[in-house]
Image (tube, rainbow, N blue to C red; front, top):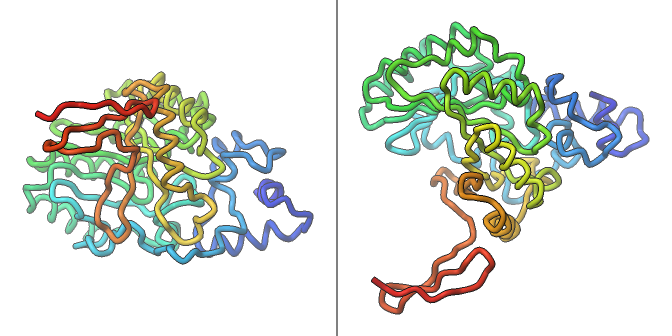
Length: 342
């Protein structure tokens, strides 16, 4: 790791890698599993995999718009480990560790070995809360990475959620199939079994090189269990802020039978400014992708409004006008066309 860090920093200082890694790890843990480390080209100072996982000096610098809780989880947390922002769904965070600690994480400073997950009593209380609120139709397991739980603990949690009559869906957010596919053992796959609810897995992947043969084998193993998969990707400067890279990623996901679901505009977490892409640039990328990809391969470009005000689509607008004056529809090539009012 120190060798990779030194190369990434492009420094001749033998101690710089260790110093910056120590300082960065004090803010957000460092962990790069072998499956991801194997994808890094140590000779490339701009390697897109390394940029996501290897600490850099830039992450020690905070910007004026940075927020320690950019998505406003705290304001919508009725109980430890539970976020209830939207009426019909909740986030349940049973784990606070990850297979890899992404340097752009919006929950940085709240994850890792120094941040204990909900204990048994707290998890019981969270499940009781879900059971007592019939408007909750979906529970999203996130964190931390829920697939870092021991199989028996994960199986128990999913079985208890599956037994709540009004919970129609359980969604698991995970980077494990990409970062540490060897964790997808038969026991862990068994833990994802449901009888009543629909269980979906949302796969976090940001670059086409991450879809390595072991990762694709892990995806196949999940699909073989009848688990539908969608993906979420974060738009990151120096990683995937390029239409060719994103198109390659989304096409590869569709080929692997994973539906690209969200392209996230980066949340303003402390020390992540060097990853940020402007909103106008993100919209231009989406316009380019719409010209070359089918709807099946095109995710929604979304932004979480800072402060906990919800997620909204921020892709390029194709409609302008009103029913009174008529409409103008802009096609994927940017050409406007009149469209009659109803």
